[in-house]
Image 1 (tube, helix red, strand yellow):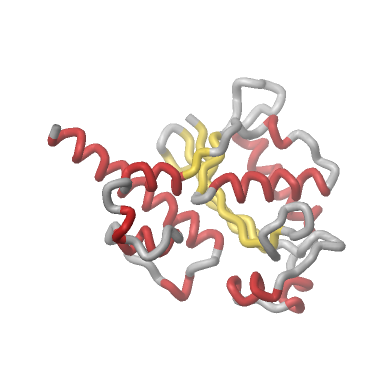
Image 2 (tube, rainbow, N blue to C red):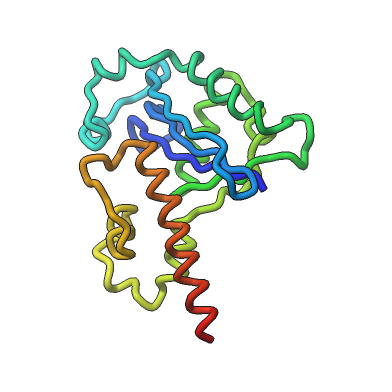
Length: 195
């Protein structure tokens, strides 16, 4: 099984008008981590930049201008994808996994398409695997105990150490997501063994 754990930081919430500024992920094959990566990337030309998004990620417009060009990062990402996937084999694809995964999936797909790359579906199965929904299902009897369902709040609730100063760094967030998946899977398996 080929898993592609991915998190993004963006200039806003709308993939049609905003852009990606950080792409981070973990490649996992048959349960073994193969590599992790983290790319900062300049927003695509003409993309809107929300001041609120800049506050969240702790960057300035000048910071964003200093990042590598999108075409360079696109090729770096494709090099990773092509290392593990044969895009001409329709049965060889990654499971796209994240926290609120559809957001990242749609943003990454739009980012590729805006750069005239239309073969996103050759690398990833649809739909993406959303750890947020998995955790929500497993915490159905406890949901009222959580202030909200943001990644860091859920991790804290499940006793996963969170370094709040590192939140909204895409690599840190995807590592937390993977830990959260492991924790909720352990919890689920314990409950099954009791029954």
